Image (cartoon, rainbow, N blue to C red):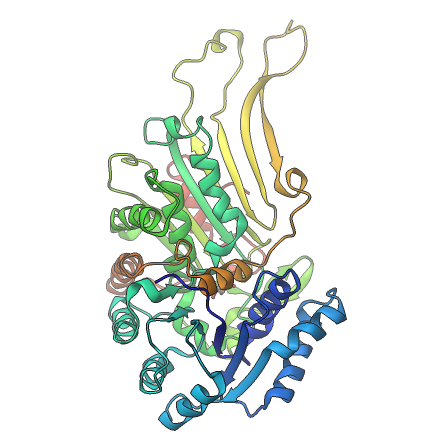
Length: 479
Ligand code: BG6
């Protein structure tokens, strides 16, 4: 059912995500009048706040994470907020919550960002308090389980109260402008699609590199590791957008139908097709940083880096490797997709001593937002000593091309779509399950082969075995 909610209920309203992303996003949407004046935002968590003290809490978060925002804009945003203390395991608290929310006749959007163990009691509490009706939709923040089985349990619990068309699974990478731009690049331009296949593409690289370490997420991260924290969701969503068939429409069903086909075509990798690593002390930007074991305060087998050679068993991508890598404490923060084309079938320049390089399309997702096409060009000159060719970039820098529009936080887009009910940029249950299916098989294979992470120095590009993984195929990681 289509409706625009006039209530937004935030679970985990005092958490890190709320402070860093949700409150700033909502404040920015408010300031740009993109959310209706009547939208009430109700925060809930265990911490003991009332409306006033929660508004003070929110103000502090906004001052910290939106330091350049006008004070008057923050002042006019805060009255939208109210707060209700809630212990998700106590059903009576949901009745108080329902009183606080008031009528939900126009519609309510829920944003659930709590510990996975609280998902089931929260859904049950909402149901009992009559807060799951036809005009309520729910957004679910990761982690949605740690395996296919546990994700099914969560999805089943949610499905008891919310049908799929009112369930919005969040992968914040889909809220990023540059990730959505992948669709425009592929499907709003004629020149890529005819070449976008195994006949013309040699291999694809996807890198999500981070400089941060464990941050303050000891409890969560050590139980997850890079494969489940980054590959299972963000990396596989990027891969699906790169590899999917052209959907017939830009709508939730058409796009998600195509993505899930890609995810189901992922081949189980061989033992030699993955490398895991864990950082040891080193330096980033000239600053010394501790090792993972030191940050954690104990030894651990959790991987903070993973590189995988993946394959899609379908007609379009037969024989085209997808090299994926992600890690913490790498030398720079960079998310990028590189599509490496094949060489020209015959070089007319060979007889003149010139070499051709394959073309490459480099799509910068963050922090650089650009699209660069590496093309061969003739080096100017009279060529008395032979003709020379060189690879030169055709470069589009998004901030230059689009100087006008404000840069948005990914959650602004996702919160607005949740409030208004557009599922296109949310992950469907079958996608999540296909993702877990592949990840579980990798983990099972690692366990049976006793794979333990190799160490790498913080500030390097991961263990040397990750470089070898690509180099044995004659491939160099794009850096
Ligand atoms: C989160 C992971 O999903 O994504 C974090 O849990 C990671 O470990 C973060 O740091 C990266 O997001 P972004 O938007 O900074 O690339």
